Image (cartoon, rainbow, N blue to C red; front, side, top):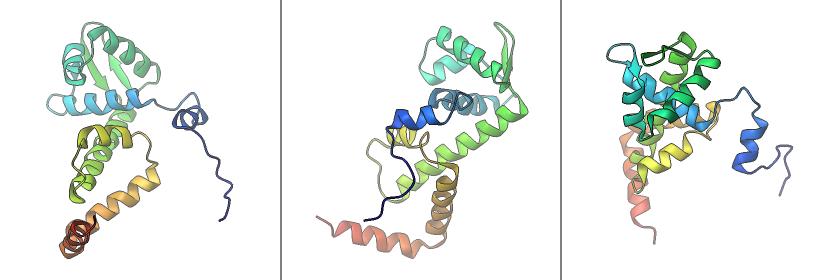
Length: 158
């Protein structure tokens, strides 16, 4: 067995080593949802965001203040929430990451607790590993025989 130079941390330890400018999982979720809700008319509101994320409006207000400090959104008190160009880029990526991981798990038949697992996984997968998973999803969709063989193999396991 070979020991690598890569350190081993708890999940929280990896968050801490990311630095103070890193986005938290909650910030990512908010940006993803703001992006989703903004698709129709270019903005969303606190109450729509609170409802969609199943949180209270005061929690949304605190988070949008943090996101505004990071220059990822613009908002008016009691008004509209708009993504900045950087916020839109990140929101689009977070939505793509979410959808791709959900599709990956669905394709391999891992559908129990699907939403919960996707929500957990999406915040901890690196961008490079996400790209590999995304490529694998494309490959599996283009090569359905591979997926069929996998499911046949899986069905024979105890």
